[in-house]
Length: 190
Image (cartoon, rainbow, N blue to C red; front, top):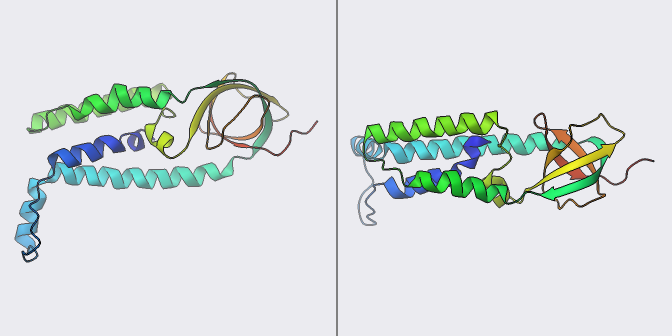
């Protein structure tokens, strides 16, 4: 999820650093010419690789969340946390675009920064504050729940594609200790 949250950074670095001359009347480059183009564009190619890996992780996440079946639970308190997406974007992604990436030292500096941010992001369970999820229609809520299923930590963070409201009946799937993906349930059994 952390890598997926950085897709915009990878796109912006690619746009800033790609170096390819476009010629519609030219013949296609041969092997040695393609190798020279690849060497001149190693950072943009690494960004494309990271984007492809991020896409694979999103596909795995999409398959994982199909199974939100635990519950039903009733929402007894709710707080909308959709601004968490913007905080991550404004605090981490946008400033990283300004890193100078002209030398190997600067690229190593950015890589170390991304690894450290990732470690903090994962240890603090902030993977749900992912701007990519927001663009894909996911919403974040902090709620308290009650229900007949197994007791859940209170409060907990919900990630949902649906708008969740007070007194809604939901089914959950645990992603982390206090973080759940949810779908609305049809009814809560008495």
